[in-house]
Length: 102
Image (cartoon, rainbow, N blue to C red; front, side, top):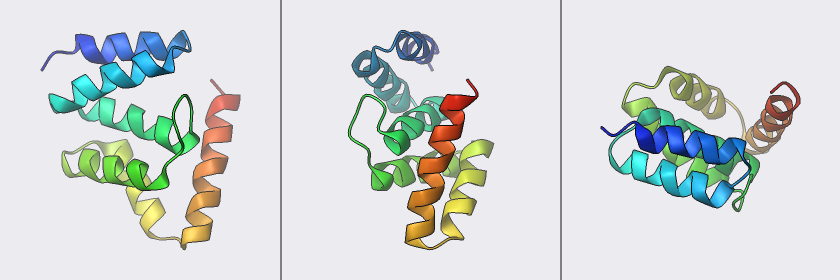
């Protein structure tokens, strides 16, 4: 696995170059990098630099969780144990908080 895709994605994200970040994350995901799956999921959740998609976020969470990523497992469990409206609200609130405490 080429970890440089993940590092380049993180760097592009910090520089607010979201298109490049997602491109790098997708390359890392293609190589099976669960951390890149998790980070791309967060972008889909919040709509940061891309169109917000709860469905894509959930699919990536599930893929990362199936491959052993602990944060994705926890997030998927929380999302699965709530109603659809609560899930949407929860994801939106978490994204707001993450932005607040960076």
